[in-house]
Image 1 (cartoon, helix red, strand yellow):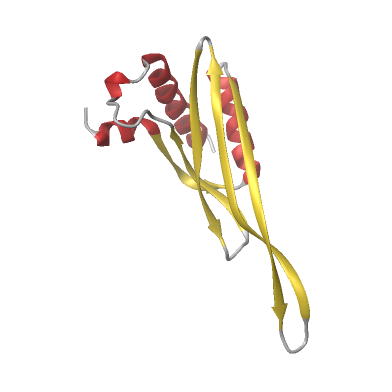
Image 2: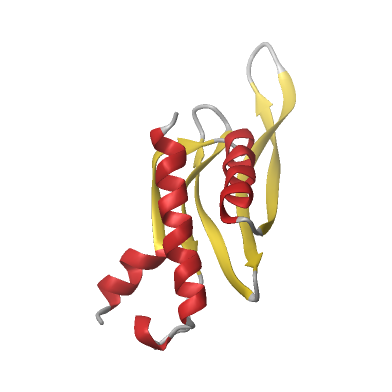
Length: 134
């Protein structure tokens, strides 16, 4: 199997970007549909910037970055994932663009734990269902 085939199985690009609130809904839906625990962390970093204009001197606090990652655990199998994120400076909010499962560097798809690969496939199917319903 090629690296492209592994990437196809482990990356999920969302049809639209999600904010933190909708990411939480998606994770809850995953946990329900996978019949698994989905542990995840959302970490936000902020920056305080001094704004100086002729009429105003103040400090503005803006979101500078966000990371989301987690583990899907169920029935003696687990898979780690990271969310792909972008920051929209226009709205100063987090946007989640997709999800990527961790792989073992240098391993082909057939060398990964097949129970973990099943989680990848099931998760991708469920996420596609989630978006088709909304």
